[in-house]
Amino acid sequence: MIIDVHGHLGPWFFSGNDASTGQDNVRLMDAHGIDVQLVSSVEAVNYDPESGNQALASAIADEPRLLGMLVIDPRELALAERQLESLPSTFVGAKIHTHYARTSPRSGAMADALRLCAAAGLPVLVHTWEAEVVELAETVARVDDVRVIAGHMGGPGWRRSPSAVERTDRLWLEPCWSHAPAGRIRWVLDRVGPERLVFGSDSTLIDPGVTLGAVRAARLDAEEERRVFHANAIEIFGDRVVPGS
Image 1 (cartoon, rainbow, N blue to C red):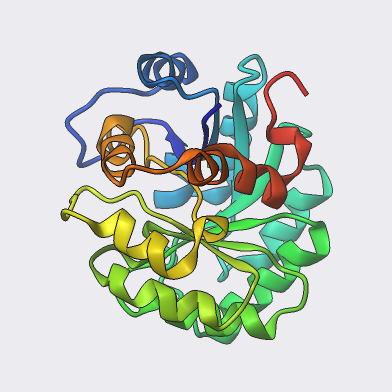
Image 2: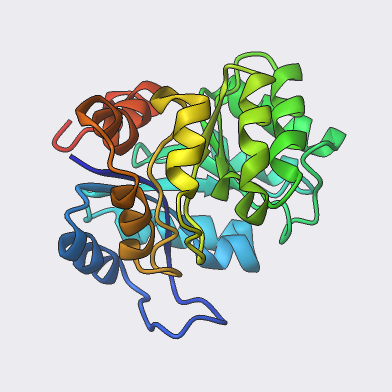
């Protein structure tokens, strides 16, 4: 079983693919053996969390293999609070993009957003790049009860990710990236253990095969594969991410 914790729904302004519907996501999932995908709205990430999150709720209502991630802009927490009051059952977590929201992982606004998610019982996927993966870990360590996934595990700063997980036991790493340096996944796994890595693809911005290939190239043993591809995600998000639950 493969649970993809980092997906998107909607067309990207700089992507060559034209995927824009839930059916497009499912088509790519089927092509790569992905059972469940957690998706955030491209519109919400890039432009408007209010309209984007609402549109996502409608788009995935009849797609049981797609589960929602509420996009939160730390600069608009009052909006996030209102949306959380009527959050559809199809949403299982939150998504924060540090760059589009212009919010540093070490900022007070980020800490406040994480506290809001913790109070709502929502795990959070946060975009990280370079040193942001460590900065995020330091903020997570200060926010009680929040569970956070560091998206891209720092991207080109992936060698910093072991230092990040040393700072808190409530941070997990997600490795999708449009580059695939040889040995990257194996290097991180050997230092953080399979309990701290979850699979994410960045679909449909990036074809899932990119990260799947990188993970497969790390030659995971049976326990590592179980952990990375689904068991860790279930521990973070609960049984709601299990197909048919």
